[in-house]
Length: 184
Length: 184
DNA sequence: TTGTTTACTTACTACTAAGTAAGTAACTTG
DNA sequence: CAAGTTACTTACTTAGTAGTAAGTAAACAA
Image (cartoon, rainbow over all chains, first blue to last red; front, top):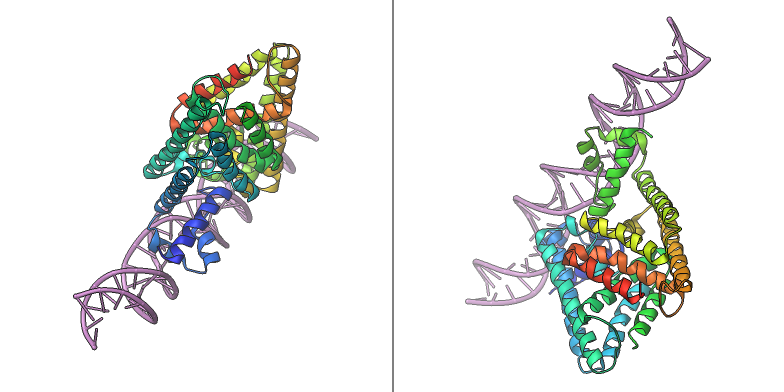
């Protein structure tokens, strides 16, 4: 991948998180990178294909991270996962899911499918993490691990959204309560 | 308020929830209502003013509902509140906060302030509900009621977003766990 | 009855969006 | 060294977008 192509994807990622997929334009990318909008179309013929690459990159990052954390105790794995969200919070970003889910109905079928895949990947990792963590007495919680995973993900996702509106304390209040509830 | 003006606001509300504030256009309103786009500008000179009216209407509805529920036990109040979200889920809507928070940075200062007010109103109602509910032994939970209120709101908000992507079971799984956790 | 307001329409402007066709300079490969 | 490929630019099209100025028919008010 060329330098420019990388920069386009990174900037698109940032723009999706800050402004939303439908609100950013090619000008928001071409101007700061000092290229013409046709240069973006050269690398990504359509906006949808650019969006796909952003989501795919995020999924690769998730896979890399979880692989890296694999040998840690589950409570520490979860803590690392929260750390990714904290970092985004500090940078004024929301998570990709939190940005793309509201726009879901306006996305191309290809992007819809990719977003679905990302959601499933996150959910299955979190489910596994909680399940194993409970088995290893790192977590204490009631009910199905899959249900609990949905709760944790939804809390982290919304904490970034609410932080936008209510200030960054929303994130820290939510994430702290979350981890305490799990007995982590 | 005239009939047309009412219909414009209702349709804008639906469009914000389904497509997002930046993704809907005046054509999405003028065509189904069989008026010209200038008619919308007559009632709402700018898109921002239309958005403000949608949020204000939502805040009035919230105030009406909570007033109506005031004498119910707190667990039933919360159940009614969840019912509003369930209804939206069934209609394929997300909540206004869930739709407007990701677009927050692209909104006019006036809309940003109004969205903030809405978030504060929801949070303060939920906090009061949980606080009183715990006092009246209707709820059991650890920690500050305000923190818990943030968790509940963030779960409901994200449950609608995730339902878009993962199907409506996400809502029911999250809301069921939520209520069980509170001992409601 | 005349003047004013309400609720629009007609016809338009200024702008921005994504996307494309053709050209080009530099690098790579046989 | 020639041919092709890569990574763009130039210049453009098409199709929207929010928003506006001027006109109008009907209802209402003095």
